[in-house]
Amino acid sequence: MAALLLRDLAQVATPAADAGQVARGRDLRAVDVIEDAYILCRGETIAAVGRMRDLEPLDGDIEEIDCAGRSAVPGLVDCHTHPAFGGDRVGEFSLRAGGASYEELHAAGGGILSTVAATRALSPDALLERVTEHAEWMLAHGTTTWEGKSGYGLDHDTELASLKAVRVAGGSPTWLGAHSVPPEHPDADAYLDFVLADVLPEAAQLADAADVFLERGAFDAPRARRYLEACAAAGLALRLHGDQFTESGAVPLAIDLGARSIDHLEATGAIGVQELGYSDVIAVLLPASALFLDRPMPPGRALADAGAAIALATDFNPGSSFTTSLPLIASLACTQLHLAPEEALVAMTLNAAHVVGAADRGRLAPGMRADVTLLDAPDWRYLAYHLAGDLVSTVVRAGATAYRR
Image (cartoon, rainbow, N blue to C red; front, top):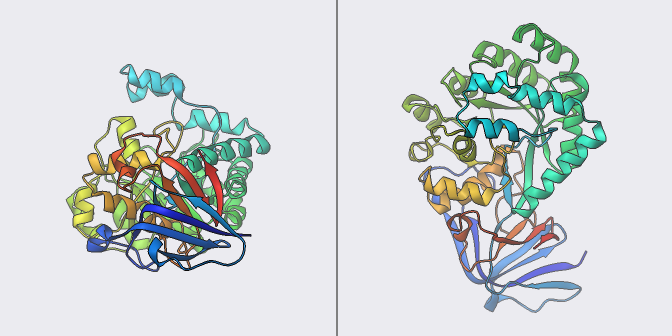
């Protein structure tokens, strides 16, 4: 592979914190900006980053990209998505927009279980085709690393096919085996008996992490603990959907089990914010979901001020956040969660990479994987400033051009 030189960049912006640590407190705002810069990639790795005036003559086979007028940020990392699904929920969206209640949506056949039925109807090849299409959408928005959950199969074959599809499409698979209770099981306990005995052994060979929806109407804290402890014993990292609609014990459970992250937090109060501020659990904030459902936003500013490690993600799914755009999430983080552009950048690069266990991503520095998102703007802060703009011009993934507008 020829070396790749991104030259004459207006700006290079990268988290200043070391790749081996999660950024919080002051480090969450620490971004190094280099003007009139270059990035040199050799193979899949960044070899050098610096000012153009300091670039020494290069020998050998070099591919050059003229980046005049553009800025560069690390390849974006989407650490919470649900890409493995069939069908859509556009009808449900229309009903909700027209004022339908939660009960009316379910009576009309909406909700998670409607997507379960559509996903089960897909062949493994068709499911892979859907996940691959969704991965391409993410790439066009500057995402180079992404996590993808199962959870719309809730049976043996479809759950495993979902995890395989995420892996083949280039994502990090998370087994969301405890997303909802499917209709063929009488209650949550019976369903957990089934998935832990019949699905977990194979899921643990395919997935990197396990997730649970701890919420009223889904799985309560004791059942979530049972599921997560079994998954941890099988070698999976732990994550939780928590405090989306109610505080139901998700924060203390995540801290007690040493979970890698707790995601959503729209309903988290002052005590939960303080507890996360003292913990090692990363708070993954999903503002598009809150916007889509017209729910309160998660307490992003309070969490950052409390010293919590925060990450940002799209929560891409067919029912409550139909977007794959992390630049849109950056805009929402600044305007709705009251985070600084620097905090938003770090939260969707360095910190999000830690959530998915990819410590070689999220910074533009020698030795890191050569994932770069080029913005068609002279200032990197356009990432959040240009609301829903056609901003991403080129994406380099593992040292090769993966997308060009």
